[in-house]
Length: 117
Image (cartoon, rainbow, N blue to C red):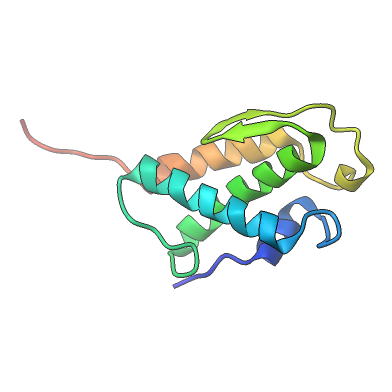
């Protein structure tokens, strides 16, 4: 099983602990965990999860951290990000790339259901 750390989130957007404190990222991890739980309809623990769940939670928390740094907002899977011309984010991946990756991962995590009526 895998565990998501604050450094995993920072690595995605190339920021330091001076940019976003640990306590903030831990809250973002919990929000991302709850969002994934709601999407999948099952209990998840970001400290003890599958590799796929870890990746989803990490990317979603990274998006939350970009929102935090830019003054944008994020709720669940909806994001509003202000001007990204912040020096801290100069090496961060574009938000659209992260959002698309997140959507792709969620579709895989949900899987395909084939049943009988």
